[in-house]
Image 1: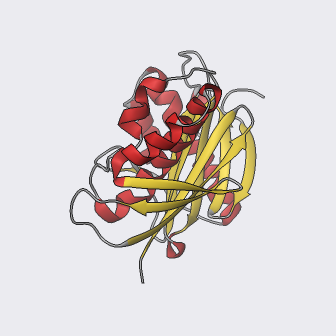
Image 2 (image 1 turned 90 degrees about the vertical axis):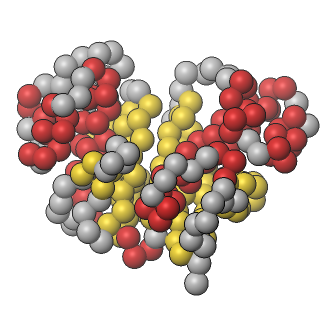
Image 3 (image 1 turned 180 degrees about the horizontal axis):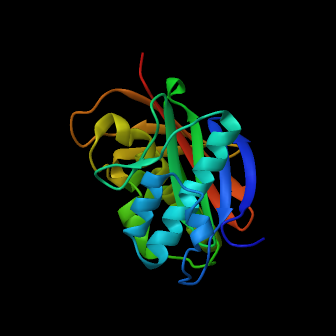
Length: 226
């Protein structure tokens, strides 16, 4: 498929996921592609350069496709930390891993969502393990065989990225990797426990990992504890 065309549309347990092809090279975004965005989105895109612009446009196009399928009419804004700001009553998360951009869209009544896409390049970056994993999680990984270690770290990294995005609307601050403890439950699902570094609202957080072609897809949903 050509760049900036829809790659797939998939229903997840927490919302509608849409993927869009984006350039792997520093290509300019064609005018006819920019014209598909809302005026506010287009203006924000033109303030960016290089890969930042193509990533941004790909994510907004994915959002617009998902929004159309859900009967949603609105603009995906930009928050103070660069996070997507969904139209009232909705929750949206975006992720980019060239050559793919994805957007996950759902009704906010069910909680706030987060999505992350990792992999695709085959690189093992075990140097991030201590930064991403809590001591007890690192201990579990170190007991695995060497070929199993990086996939385990990558899954946890992707899931915690999605968790950070899901909890952000409730805490409005940076959330470190050690503030979430994840435990595999099987079938790609994970138990999530928040270990807050400072006072934060009580949240129920769930997450899962599933394959997405050559990539790894992680999603999370956060809701206030009743």
